[in-house]
Image (cartoon, rainbow, N blue to C red; front, side):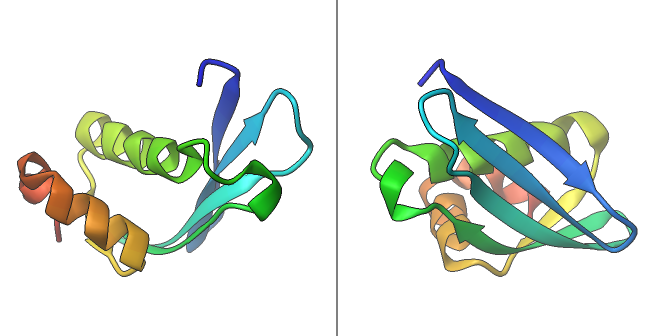
Amino acid sequence: MDDLEITRHDEDTRGEYRARPADSDAIGRLTYQKRGDVLVADHTLVPPEIGGRGIAGRLVDALIADARSEGFRIVPQCSYVEAAFRRHPEWSDLRA
């Protein structure tokens, strides 16, 4: 899906990735808590009106790409993120 904008929004102790398809005002989110150099991925939420497009997977891909480039590790507390880690054993070095 090339018409998907993914942005990252950080606050002091929390943050989220947001995904917005060009053809909708709905926003998918992957939220996290920051604990030093670890992000606890706690929820992945994609509204039904934009579901079935692989948006949740793209949110996780953005999280993984940032972890690789910025050097943080991830606690996959969210069941979706945990399942993605099981499908991708090559991400094991990013698990906190």
